[in-house]
Length: 418
Image 1 (cartoon, rainbow, N blue to C red):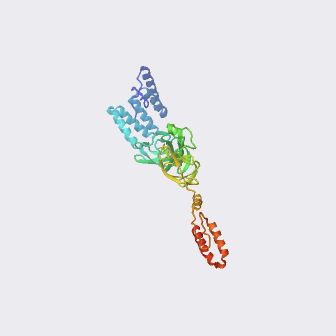
Image 2 (cartoon, helix red, strand yellow; image 1 turned 120 degrees about the horizontal axis):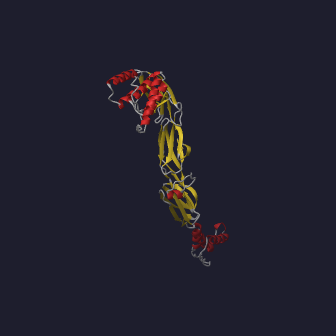
Image 3 (spheres, helix red, strand yellow; image 1 turned 60 degrees about the vertical axis):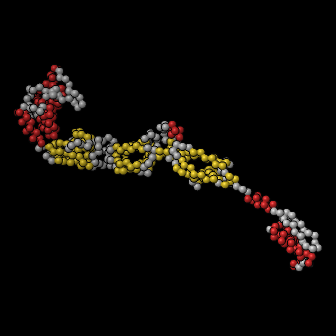
């Protein structure tokens, strides 16, 4: 469609900027570009004419200039852009003269038969740039299918940090067409951080991959993420955020979470780690007693270390003392101190020796004709000696009547002392 070449023209403002206020010099420059465009158009130099008309529109918007832009695009085979230019012209100038309106309607009807719609499916990463025939047409996901000139079209999707996805589509006029995208690599970005800004080890699917904050390219799909490590106790109490990994201190860890990574997209995971242990100190009287925790020997008292939160059975033992057991409950950020005084065991051997020394013998008389045998505090050995003497006097246990009573008394004494 050709409009009145003598009409005035004015350019549209660039995206995001307000139109320039027209001045006499701008109007003159716009007029010069418009006339250049008409001359180029008449020579069928459509690409050069298009550039001249666009420069004119930049300076001063005009319906005739917009009409020429649409005509240039049509001649260049950019039917979709020509159709959009006519639509923009109608929005800017809704009350076109009848003659011009008829011409515009006829051109738009013709162009509609030369374009189709293009949608994107398959591996279409959000935020990626969509190019059709090397022209940027928008970002994914598209709000609606694109209007594309019929014919074979090269489709490309680009996103920073990943390989472009390419395909070709034979666009059919008046039809809905779909570009099926298939990525050659199936990766996505995973970003892991700790909510307190602690520097901890990142465990991804059971393997150590780095420390927080961590960012890496991983396979598309679900992944198990966990944080663990240590925090200096001083930093923990002061609520400071360390800048390096601690190799000892308060043990901290997060729960395991599942991160779903999508193709070429960035998935962020923020985990909160919590203390997994608390400090315990065990002292004993006497000092140096063996300390067992949950049936496992850990050292000698005084002993100090960190244990998992929860209940623990503490046992303290030492030679010559009764062992002592106590259950303690360890809580987050609370240090426990346990002082144990062991009770001494009695010395059984010494008591046995004392008991034997305290036995009191019983005085016994040996009978007629013999002086009475008075025995006091007689030990078993003494009774045995006396019995041996009497047996010597009584071979084969055949005693004279004078010694028989003494022998029986000695035997009875031995039995009592034993």
